[in-house]
Image (cartoon, rainbow, N blue to C red; front, top):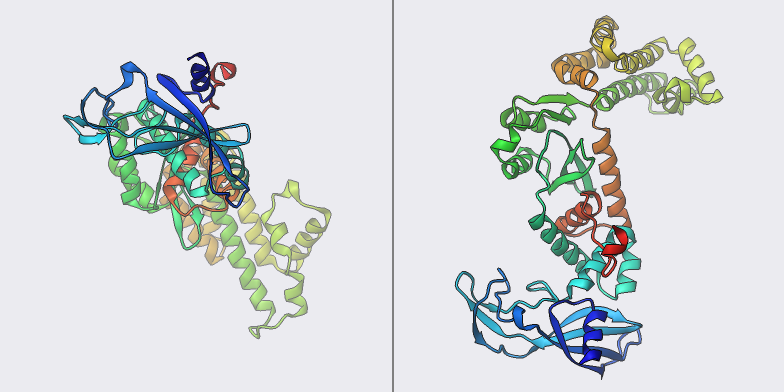
Length: 425
């Protein structure tokens, strides 16, 4: 009996009685496996005859059709399984269902310890490392991550106490596959993500949040996307909407690039062939995009050439730099930005005339970023980490698996390795 208790402890299972352990020969697989360990177990007395869905005590229905196995953590180099009767109970709420077992989630084919270790590894390692170490498929890893996150989500109210949030979208796959991402500015955690980037997708978040907690949101940072602005205005109209300065400067950089291409095409004479003048502009965009303090000696020389040979392009460059400095003026941002708007109106460069109109349309949100010291930098950082997760995993076929893994990694509730909870406190 004592040896059986050791086996139960070895497999990190609670409320379980290990009845017998045996080695079993199997057909040799592609990785040379031919021997597995099977631990015959049963729930302890207080955990028997419980509904697999709700966990409540229920009347026994039958013993089931056959015994069932759950993949457990390896013992040494041997695959290990927990085996038990798959008895069924009759629950008042859920009807006839398979009885719950204390070592695994309902409907899962792996033990809780196996799930926990796979989920922890998935947040720290590459796809290849996880699948080889745990001897399982990547789709199985995604399913496990979803199960573990579902448990965390049921136990933790991650949306409590929200005041300042950031909203953005990220492309996670080719062919315009996007996720909408919401981040908490105060805790720095990923709050919520869902496939899609439209009003219907973002509305799901506010529906989950509820009207009472939505009314407590004070600040929302985002880019200038209309679908974000419309939902925010409708669901939390009292919140201060903040437009990230990074996106405003990006508008200026895009306008500058429009002017550069116009000058470059003019140098080619509309013939589509490279000329001496067009070649001189070939690599100019790198110097035009950079901040002055980051320029190399070659790029400074190139800008001096642009100033002499292409005054319109140089004026566009000065407009871009002027906007960048205006947005960094602190308490004087509104005044500096208005001076820039007046300058852009008189510049006779169509791209920047259009840009100042866009800034006027989003004036309140742009000024709010300076007044409240808030930006979407945290959200952009979170997007970078999600891209890294996607790259390490070599892509995801199922967005829910990506979301679950991102929430486990960035949501502030990382899984613990089995048996190490006390050591990590």
